[in-house]
Length: 206
Image (cartoon, rainbow, N blue to C red):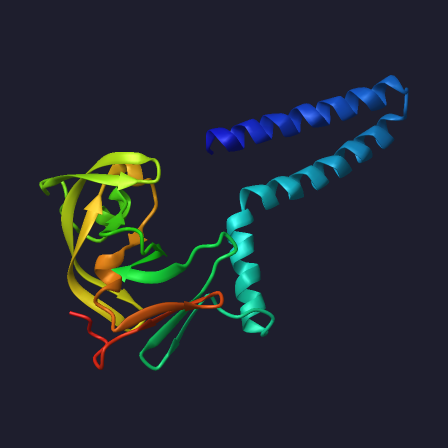
């Protein structure tokens, strides 16, 4: 249980204690008090579970909406072309694989080189600890990173080999597809709220 979840649980217990104290002051029957507290506990428990699992619930609701045709999937492949719908946060997020490891990656044309988190690097078997140190400019200022190489990165059918990536703990859990990936495409453009990635005649971008 995380620290945040512990705080939430303590808050729930305190809330129930206040309710019980309020009812006791009014000299209500014990059975009624117990039923009332149990009812509030059930409601609070449901709310707590929704808050803790909001990401999983949101993902399941989006998948359900897509399956019954209420919403369109965020990433669609048509032939050799990949279309990525803009996320509610205003960014384009690609479903990609790095050395076979699935990741959700921010597509950022402002990043010269693709960047991945230490967790992703370890999961993908990328040795970065001995990589050349580099200084990377970010929106939050310059940070120190290590240069490494991903054997293969793919977005749907679009795949490229031996792509340089920067790895740094300061990236947190963020993975970014930069211009060194986009420049290997035949073209990339935004039409409306959709990012369109098109390969050369061969989907292997290398």
